[in-house]
Length: 127
Image (cartoon, rainbow, N blue to C red; front, side, top):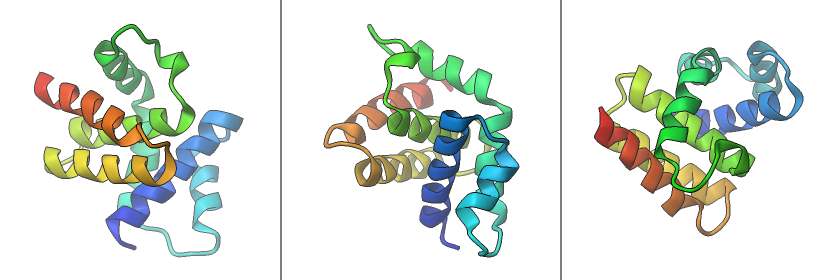
């Protein structure tokens, strides 16, 4: 599985977790649909879910005049994945940000890419 596809599936899984409260392992099974598991995908889903409190605090610090509760679920979960990659993985920061922007453009609205870029760039700058 290519990493872009893994990020897209991770977004779908985190969206399911967010909307229905299912465990990360169940969400992983749902997005795989009989396909083979992928270590990167598993890491994105399980790692993001395990560090959600810290990730959400990081995102909240970078929001101006917004609360995390007001964010659309797609944008929020793209930000969570991007923040996880920036803070907890060895993925180069610019790659993590660019991939998050592309996923946001695919699944979000016309302003999602810019929004995700702005927040993740702030998070990157705080490292």
